Structure formats: structure tokens, C-alpha cells
Image 1 (cartoon, rainbow, N blue to C red):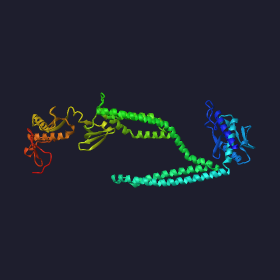
Image 2: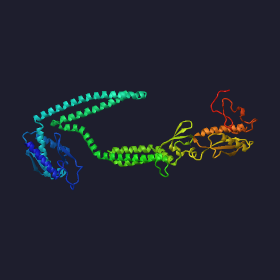
Image 3: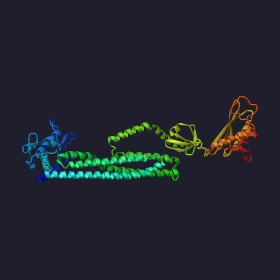
Length: 559
């Protein structure tokens, strides 16, 4: 009955301390009390792994040493079977309130201890007395033969359970390994055949098997720690060590669990932000897609701007969402997270200058309408059709069916010729130049050039072709024939046809083309006689009305 009565009195004292506003044995004082003494060093008085209360040190005795001595005196009294816990006395002394076990002074409750607990000294001493009495009761109960036999029995049960768990873990591990091996080899073998044995199933299986073994080892180690802690808790002499063993396993789990529970409100906010952002991106995509296909029209907005504008708006929405969600990201306030963020920011700043320049140049090209997909352009020395306009690069398909990838930052600084921009409305002017001697009338030269233009198919008749006199040289007059066409992609073929017809026209009328320049007149004019126009391997093709026959472009066998 002593043990039960001591326990009831201790619980009543704890409830009273909560109502009054005690310290380590109760709650802190209500608002308006003195400031917290967070910097005060205290140490716990521990008996058989159970903390009774905490005490402060004095100038000549540190807190941990004082707590150790108090615990040793309480244990010594507990081993004295002639002493009853109810005989503990509280006496007022010169330095504080003293707690005695008959003639043995266990401790002195000082004003500093009472200040730490934020309660009157006499009241704190009474609470300490009840805590010591209850600890003495447990000390003796835990060491009687019946309790030790129960502890030994529980330890054996725990050991048996651990062995059974480890055996089950090994058995299940083998079955899981076999099942995973069969599925992995079957799927990896298919991929390996299709990828010409680039993926090795044995290598993949080694990695998976190592992961499974590591997981089983972690589970086995955790089980051993938990079993050791539970078994050691059954005996008073090892209870303190059991607390440390269990803390090494349970404290990280407890901390992780608290972090997960504490992060639930933030995760809910992040989920709401993600849903709102997804809806905003979907609505924005639908709007700009409608602009692109023309179902929605905005005055002054070119449909080709829809895709790049959507990308800019999407970046803005994501940036705003990141700013809103950042404070709610778990761990965002930690120093490690801040350090990683700063490190990534420095890397981005150092390595992204060319990238950002190309991105800005890409949007500048788009909004300035320098060219569109499908246009025939010349960028620097490259001529081709625009295949793709990306944020960072532009891809051209050259007239030789080559792919040219040009950074947008280089395009902004280069000379760009767009052959297709005005060709769609006004026509593209193709031109070719010839040098003819002064002895040939210029009117005849113009007539032959215009005749060559008339013979060239797919050349616009309106506006009509025209001839320019570019230069009165030392030995020849330089003429330029200009014609209009509607298809910039066929300019190379039209140039070929136009130059062929120029050569035929001048040879037909016996006029010598003087370019390249020369220093004296030859004895014979440098023209091709009509009877040699279709020398092998050239072939005749039927002539259209009003035109001379023309050779086919393909080769033929010699006559």
C-alpha cells in the first residue's frame, strides 16, 4: 500500500503543480511571469533510466555533478530495505529546503532551483520529495525476484521474436529476389535485343539486387536495435542503456514523423498552388492556341507570335507560382536549402550569359518578324529555308539539303536577307549580268536579253523584265537583266534557266560575251555556232512555238 499511496500523492502533486504553474514537474508560468532562462545550465537526476527532475549547478558544483551525486544517494537509500519511502522528510535549512531519508540528506532545494521551476521553494521541495518517494518504490519493485524473472522471460520472448523476424526476412528476401530476377531478366532481354545489347541485364540485376540487400540489412539492423532496447528495458541496471539504444532508432523516426505532420499544412498550400497554376497554364495555352490557328483574333497581334508569347507568359506564371510557393516548401528556411539555392544561383549566373543572350535574341527575331518558318533566307554565308525557329537557335535547310544550326545571338548581329518576305506580294527580282563589247549596239543587247527572259518559264510577265546598264568598262559594257518571280524557293532553278537562255540568245545572233575581260580582240568571235549547240551528249527536245529547240538536262551517249 505504500507504493500505491506514494504514487497517488505524487500524481496529486503533479496536478497541483500544473494548476499553480510549476516548472519541470508541471507547466510553465502563465504570461506575465519572468522571462525564460534558456541559457541556464541544468542537469537531470536519473535513476534506473528515468528522469526525476532537473537541478541547477552552483559555483563550486556543476549541474551534472550535483545531479549525479543526488542520484547516487537516492540509489543508496533504495538499497536499504529498512527504510520506507514515506519516511522522507522536508526540513528548512540555512541554505535551502533539505530532503532527508532518516539522517541521510539526499539534496538541498535552493532558491535557484525554485527560480528554475518558477514556484515557491517549499512547494518545489515537496514535489521533489514525492518524486523521490515514487522512484524509491519503483527501485525496489524492479529488483525483487518476481520482477527479475518476468524481465528475463520477456527478454527471451523478445529474442525469439527477433530470430523469427530475421528468418522471415531472409525467406521473403529470397522469394522477392527470385521474382524480381525473373521479371527483370524477361523485360531487359527484350530491350537488349532491340537496342543491340546496349543494356546489359546482368548489370541491371546487380544494381537491383544490391539495393534489395541494402534494404534488408537496414530492416535487420533496425529490428536488432529495437529488440535490444526492449530487452534491456526489462532490467533496472540496463534501462539507461536501453533508452539510449532506442533513442538512436526512434528519435530520427520521431523527428521525421513530426516534420511530416508539421509539413501537412504547407503541403496542402502547395497542392492548391499546383492546381491553380495548372488551370492557369491550361487556360493560357487554349487562348494562345486559338490565336495561333486564327479562331481568336486580336488587333495588331500576329498569329506567329502566339507560341513564343505563350512561352513567356508560362515562364511568368511559373515564376510567380515559385515566389508564392517558396515559403511553403518543406525545408526552405534551413541553412542547407539556402546554401544550395545560392550555389545554384551562382552557377546559373556564371554559365547562362550566352544562353540568355540567345533566348533574348530568339524572341527579338520573332517579334521583329525577321523571317518565318518556310522563308528562303541568307544569314551570313548560309542560304536556305527556315525549318525551325527555337528559343536559342534557328535551323535552316540549305539548298544542298544540309541542316544549318545558327545561334539566335549570331543572327541578331549578322546580315539577314529574306528572299520570301516581299516575294509573296511584289515578287522577287532575279538578275544576271553580262559584258558585251562596244561594237554591239546596246539596243540589240537589250533585245537579246529580253528575248532570253521571254523564253524562261515561271517568270512573271507583270511587272515586265527590264535591263540596266551598269558600267561602261575599259573593254565592254556591263548589262544587267532583271526578271520577277513568285517562288523564292525556285530561284536557283530559274537562275539556271535564265542563264541558259541568255547564252542561247547571244549564240543565236552571233554576239560574243566579253566577260571575263580581255586585252585584245581575238581573230574569231567567241561564240558557239548553231550546228554545235547540241553536241554530244546534249539531246534535242521539242521546241515550243516561237522558240528554238533546247537541250535536255540529262546526259546521253555520244553520237
